[in-house]
Length: 176
Image 1: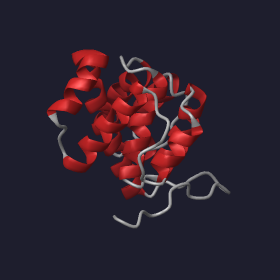
Image 2 (image 1 turned 135 degrees about the vertical axis):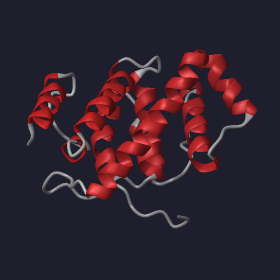
Image 3 (image 1 turned 135 degrees about the horizontal axis):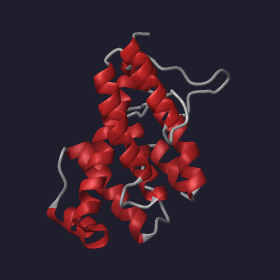
Image 4 (image 1 turned 120 degrees about the horizontal axis):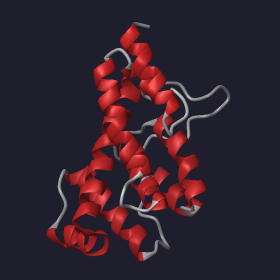
């Protein structure tokens, strides 16, 4: 590694992630991008106005839409730790609307799914998210969705492997 790559790698490792995993080894090929990217990701993971389980739901929706195996693997674990019901994650993995969501989960699922699939959200979906999470929350949902699209791109292009012995968690969807 160059001196700049080492500096950025050390900063990422010293931060709340505690290690250099996921997209960051590949991103170090452009240390400035990696550094700026990790700062945004740090906010979105650790300081978002969206509660952790709902934030992880938004990330799982993104991982599913992009069939990002590593992203799903890593964030499914975090979603379970944050208290997202396993049945909701399972439905998202299968590409279907989860049954039994509470109101907040339904808003996040609808907002993020609609955003990914239509590249916009309806006025009603926007209003529901704004009324529940405020303007900041709407921006945080859009930002976490966009950020994890970029993460998925890096992971998929760099072919970041799952840990040894871990099977791919996402099956191909028939309609994609």
